[in-house]
Image (tube, rainbow, N blue to C red; front, side, top):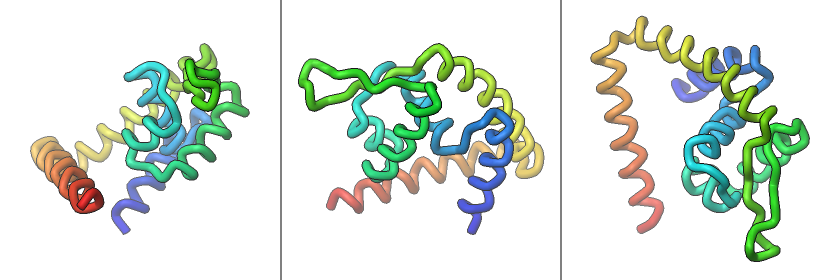
Length: 131
């Protein structure tokens, strides 16, 4: 329930920039790492490939990223467009506001501890999936 509530909070804020949390995560990851294939993007974001592909398709249609043919014609490299970069800058402001609101409510030390524990949970769950 906490996950759904927090996602709803971010979706509402990011919606002011015309994005949802999943789209923001995709644009942010490509911005941080450079061009990625959908498979690699999905792995990094811990998303099912079909979910990632649907989100990428919507961002592509909106003109926020492109899917260019890579060295192997079967592979598509995802890149931000200038419009995608601008949208990300706009959305990042809204994301930071929500981050600060949550830190203010939870408390900075508790928020940092929570993030550390969530990272540990992510790592542990990924190991269990691989086993």
